[in-house]
Image (cartoon, rainbow over the protein chains, first blue to last red):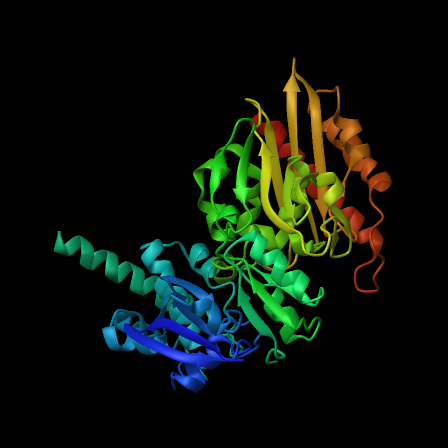
Amino acid sequence: MKVLLSTTVNGEQVQEAVLPRTSLADFLREDLGLTGTHLGCEMGACGACLVLMDGVPVHACLVLAVQAEGSTIETIEGLNETGAAADLQAHFHDRNALQCGFCTNGMLMSAQALLEANPVPTRDEIRDALSGNYCRCTGYEAIVDAIDTTARDRAARTEAAK
Amino acid sequence: MKLPSFEYLRARSLAEAWALHSDAGGDAVYLSGGHSVVPSMALRLQAPSRLIDISQIAELHGVELQDQTLRIGAMTRHAEVLANPLIARHAPLLSRAAPHVAHPAIRNRGTIGGNLALADPASEFPAAVLAMRAELEVMGPEGQRMIAADDFFLDLYETALIPGEVLTAIHVPLPPEGRLFGFDEIARRRGDYAMVGVAAQADMSDGVVSDASVTLFSVGVAPTRATAAQDALEGAPLSSDSIARAQAALATDLDPPDDPGFPAERRLQLARVLLGRVLTRMEAVQ
């Protein structure tokens, strides 16, 4: 039996009836057409499906859509719209920090959340924050570089603004 | 894989949770963070006809200092265990274990109550609550029970919880001044299941160990108290001699599984090495 779900996705109030077995990832992709949230392993190992739930990254494959009742969800499409991660995306591009791109959206979610919590992380801290994100093209070094550069750029801009 | 079909019901009170559980004739599973329940259903390891969401029940929330204990609500998420200052002060083994529990995004949803109720033998928190001699607060239709951690973890994924009961909180006895704590694990990559792990605490009195509590995880079907290693530490100063005796005693305490890819003798050796590291660090800070 379907359950009525009321949640906020990328700033918009959404009301839909969903089957309890529907994951948040399938709800975003199939009901809302937000296909930037990728599904890899569907068991919480690969990190391709990360979205921000109430401001923190979660695996959308391990959250049932019905568990998002009353929550605020932000997907990669939301980040694109606000431009909050535009510099991070540019640095991924500059540093060739993606090959096939399947993992990239999840990587960006982890990186964006990390930099909000810890504006200038060490490379070890970046690696630790990405420990749940798999890149099967094995481009980790470039990904860490891109996040590192973004962090230092943002810190320099904050400093210059003072 | 996609989850099999089930009915989803949200319980607003424990009484409602028990009623929904009993009404399903036992074919129901409680859902807190869902980070073990959901993947286990995706992998078809279980397929209950009903999930009862207990995440909004007030009794399961909050971390508070009580008379003799720190009460940690079962719904406390791993990320909060990692960040909570009361836990860092009064239950430091949990704070030290938390960075090793899965990955950051998992820690944002997984709950300590769900983790303990699952009782994965490679999991960090069960060994930590065992080492801290914590008590588990359990509520069922018949009333409340307090279960010592030593009596809670029975076998592979098997606990003292009876069907319908809900693990509501963990009570950690407040540590005396000067208690030493140690925690570490060996894993190939950060966030992987531990190949072996150690949680330990020790009280010192007049320069000798007066109360040692040593537990290991990922060494068998359940978190394991190393009583022979504890005895080896008891009554002696924490020194390279007593640490070597405790390491040797692990051969008595542990009977690790023998796997072609991971022979029992190698796991025992890793346990000895890790216990040595943990105790040596405890010796250094005293």
